[in-house]
Length: 130
Image 1: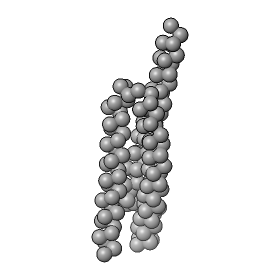
Image 2 (image 1 turned 60 degrees about the horizontal axis):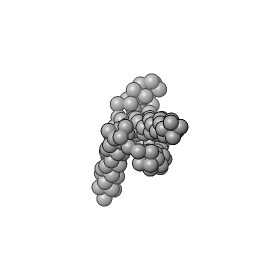
Image 3 (image 1 turned 60 degrees about the vertical axis):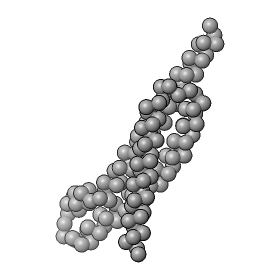
Image 4 (image 1 turned 90 degrees about the vertical axis):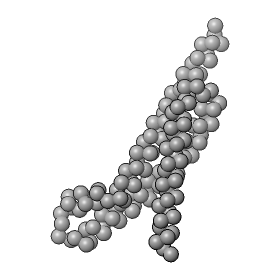
């Protein structure tokens, strides 16, 4: 039963990960045609999403660290460098890096939206001054 729960948990995380990637892709495709209101709403949503991503990344990092410890406990004679190399070859490390990458992409998207909002604000100010 525990194995089934682990499989469901992994599938759920994959679904979350793919869903977030889909949202980021959708925003990137439309960012230049979105108005300020829509961009502001997306910005708020992404900021909340970033907190969730950070939680997942922290959890994935903890799982990776536990994998490092497991490798070292099983092979106490190996060096720290060899343990690190073996751990980085694990699925746990791959998942951790995926969440790191997703966090970075989300932060960059947030920054881009903020810049676009500034451009829209400047355009609005210029047009009202004419």
